[in-house]
Picture 1 (spheres, helix red, strand yellow):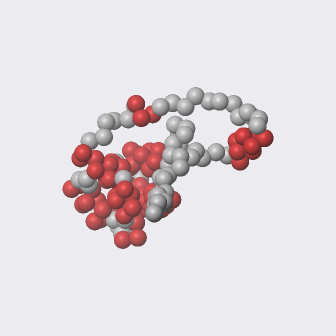
Picture 2 (cartoon, helix red, strand yellow):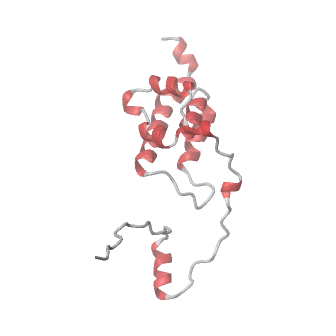
Picture 3 (cartoon, helix red, strand yellow):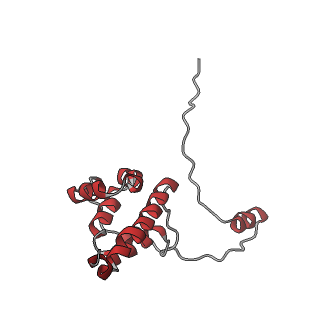
Length: 144
């Protein structure tokens, strides 16, 4: 008896806008081609240590309120979690880093899964409210 291979294979796909999809279906090359910069050549070479959370990161994580802990970010993106923990006490650097994580300033970035993006946005909100606001008003803290 002949067996059928039912294993599913991932199909490669590319996200496109509705206009791009319509132009393909209509057979029109309406979208101008733009050169995509290959950013992987500019990235720092990934190290095995990038796959583990550092001690400093565990300490930072422990200080966060339970509702603000980025569990998915730490699980799937430990290198980014380590960088965030390292910059947390440097308000300007941390704000820039959080913004860079959420904005595609390079073009063509894949982006984070929705649940991770939500955690980063929640951390950004918490940082802006609790951490950055407190460090930008040290004169008010001295009177309490």
